[in-house]
Image 1 (spheres, rainbow, N blue to C red):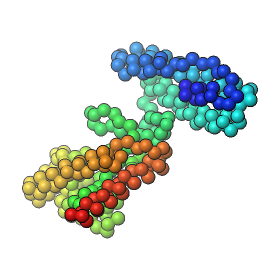
Image 2 (spheres, rainbow, N blue to C red):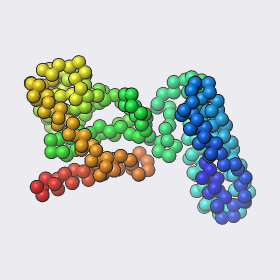
Image 3 (spheres, rainbow, N blue to C red):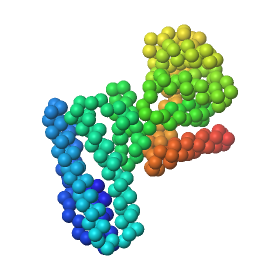
Length: 281
């Protein structure tokens, strides 16, 4: 919002727009919230943060009035006002979800939250006891050759156990048959998934973590289990390569559709390089 106010002052013919820059206060409150306990003290900090946010929103409303009264370039003003009209509802939504969660002790569903006013399609990703992350969850399937066979950009933060069978069904649909052997991350492990995979024609399934499932129920022998588990560990190197060499650690394209294209372009580039290495060797 401060950037928008500064842009308003830089428009051709714009008058002097009076406002106070509350960025430093907002950063201090945000930093204090992260390290403050208990809830009542944290709530006071949230209230201060919301107050200065609302004050800045008022500055923007006053700036709109001032620009309408001044001989400002019409096209520049139209562009500026369209940005204000885009961001203000998103900021008000963030304030609303904060008030519901902090002051009303309400469990706000993730579907009713936004986690980024710049990329509204951003989801929250929680992986066990690890730090909360923000972005989009991907499910990948790979082959022995190292090629990425499929990628699914998920909505929200679905449990891995719920995504195993849909990924397997996609593979069967795309390639006409079930793979003979499957090695997957431990998060996908469940007895139901094992049973359903074998009913679809998969002979051996190895979950990286057993989760109470016996080895003899998954594969023919402990040796096969170790081989498939080691193969699964090697896939982590491919995921790391996608992140480091092909840009999947951070998307720099704006919007959900562009995000999807970015992901697929990274996968295609990875597969082309894999093809080239195999041809040259």
